[in-house]
Image (cartoon, rainbow, N blue to C red):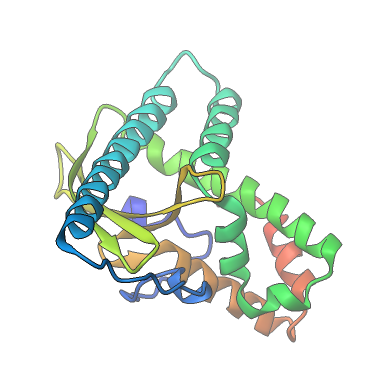
Length: 223
């Protein structure tokens, strides 16, 4: 568990268990079905979406651990492939905006662009390193459920040979393109999105509320 909890860039780890990211979006109220036939169709569609979400995580984990454990690939090649995977399977812009919190609105357009580029690079380096530690091991998806009106939470475990299993919950949301995207990973009840948001807020506050301080912070290589 310790290794994966190190996904956050900074060392400050909080333990929020509240639903991450959902608080930064406005949910649209949906109309209630008018009869049992519509309710049945709706439920069947939901079941299908849950199965698709589970398959999505199974494929993501298998793909990531597969090429990250490939000793024939250089570290640079692994990070290149992992960056492509993240950009395809994760909503990096939404995650990055959420992590900056209220300071996103005070940042200039140029600062936002620079921050998102650096944030993306940081996530690639840190996540690829952590996933690499689980080569030869498997992520087992155990369940899924709707989370709020827009999200799906997929529960899984990393099965470790020499240690306790690590619980990972993946928060997914369907993007405007109709494709599922990861918007958060919750490790043993700790939201990576909320942890990152708290860490970034501390960095900016120590800099007197200057967003440029966070950008300079991200320009440093993760340890």
